[in-house]
Structures are given as structure tokens and as C-alpha cells.
Length: 433
View (spheres, helix red, strand yellow):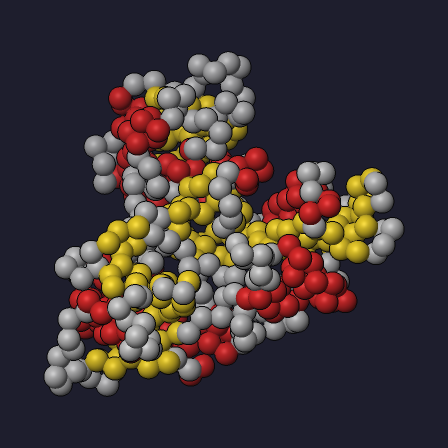
């Protein structure tokens, strides 16, 4: 759906957002976004305002969908698109992040979210985005073509009072970041992202917004820290109190030459110092940076408790286009495997459709859509959108075959070729919100 406004029937109209919708949308957020105890989720309400007040680097009111009841002129449902750039092993690709999905209770189960998702998917494609992404409740977004394909959160934790003492003298200083640190933070962040498959690209301008442009109390307003060793910048960290007894360290990047163990400990000690004396015995410090992180690996004796990651929902409507975009990565993967120089066409059945990849001397010569005639067509099959878990390195073929009985490979050679093209690899997406 691209033609808006659109009549949805029953007196409802779907249209783009306008600047004057800011107040009514925040009123909607007050009703729709609530904590488990029924209280208003004030940070989300503030975030909604921040996205509409003109301060955000990429979001404008017309990136919101609005479902309006023409009878009472009330906004009854909404969501928004947050354009950004991610990278696949360093190759950039556009992403439309969908967020703030909400409908007043009396208007639910009428298909309003589906109509709005169709609209923002079209907007996103029109901007050249090759994927859409969303964080959200279990299962719900699978019905719109998404799969939980990239790890989100997880990590390791410890009690705040369990940290070893700092050295004396201590060469490490951890201080609040300022707008003037944006360039150095961007550099350190970019260096750290090199170790991951899927990441979010952040410019110095985005970092400047994070450091000084966020609305007070916004859901995504985070304290940012600069880590120094012997007077030079050696790291960056971001944290927030996720609950009444946990401090989440959501970003921690340390210059490897300065020392991951001591640098991460310095950040954790700083967070402990922000707690009151009586809080330290009951607070948990969680390095929520995914299942694979050098700081956690360097502190196995300190960060002793593990937490499984959740996942990003990812949608890729045109898989051949995405594969052509990241072809250099796939070709590199293949060249480093026993399938180097492979020739042949790989046909993938997704049951609702499919695609093919043609390899010539280990290079991706082309890719296109496949129209399977029956479930047994193709060299491999992936139910629903589970191929995305392989594409984004979250699961190997063996793990997918174990988890999904209707996932299949024609033989071990096909399974091996798929693993060679799409090896398991950690990702970390510190997305723009």
C-alpha cells in the first residue's frame, strides 16, 4: 500500500502523520503503552514526543502511520519507521526499523496493524532499504514476514558487591561523555564493530544526538561514559537501570591494547560507585552485549551468570537482491572453506516461495526467485522465514535441522555448502531508535 490516505472502512482512515499529531499521539501512548502494574510507561511517551518534535536526526512526523476514527477525530492506532544503515560484515545496507506499534483496545483485532505494516514496508522499500527490523513481543511479527534472526541482548552478569578491588594507583578513569567526545566515541565504536557480522552504523552526528539531543526521560536516553587509561581515551560505555535491581551495560568497547579485562572492570566499578551503599548487595551488573563479547571472555571469574539473548525480528522481502548486495562476503566465506571455487546452482525452497544462487568458480554470478511446484523442490528447504537465521549467522544448518524438522538439505554436501556460505557468526546491533 502506497496510496495514502486510504479508507479502511467503519469510519477509519489510514494516513501519514503530521506535526500537529504530536500531542494526540502522546495521548495514545499514555493509553496503550503501560507497565505490567498498569502504570503509564513514561519513557516511551517521552520517546514518542522526541520522534515528533523535529530533534531526531532521521525521523519526521510523516514517517508515522496514523489510523484515525473520522467520527470522533481520534487517533486509534499508529506505528513509525526509523530509517538507518546497518552493515553485513562491513557492507552497508539500508534498514527500516519499525517501532511504537500500538492500538487502542477498542479497535484491536481489526487488521489495522497489518494495513500499517504494509504501508511502512512500502515506504522502506521506496527508500532502498533491503531489510526491516523490529524489537517486540514473542511471535507477533512473524505473521508479517519476520523471523527472529539476529541476537538481541543476553550476556553475563555479577553482583555489584562481587568486584575485585581496583589497583592502587588506578590508571583508569571513567567519566560522563560530553558532546565533544562524539568523534572519539564514533571511532572506538566503529573499531569494535569489526568483530561482528551484523551491526548498525552510527555517524558522529548520531553520536552527538545521543550525547546531547535526546529528550530528558526518553526511553532511549542513556548515560554514556568515556573510559580513559593513563590520560588517553581507551573505551566507551553506555548503561541504564533496566529494573529496580539491575544495571545493564548495553555497550562496552575497550581498546584491546589497553586491556579488555581491566578496562571492563573499570566500567563495572564505576557503575557500582553510582549505587548507594545499601544497594550494592542487591544489585546485579549485566554486560548485556550479546553472547560473545571480549569483556565477558576476559572476566569468566567475575561475570559468572549467563543470560540467553532474545532476538531481533528481521524481514528481507527480496532475498536475491540482498544476496547480490552481500556477495563479496559470501565469496570470501566460500574461499576460506573446503568449497572454494565451487560451481553450480543452489535452489532454496521456502515453501511460500524460494530463490536460487548460481556460483561460478566460487563467485556469485547471479541470484533470482524460485517458484517451487511442490514441497520437495529445491536442494534445501526452510520453513516460514527461518532461512534468515542462517543468512544472519544465528544458527548453522545442523542447528536449524535439529530445531525445525521440516527444514532439510538434499544431502550433506548441500548442508556443507550452505554452512560455508553462511557460517555462524556473532552480531551486535546497537540500533538507532
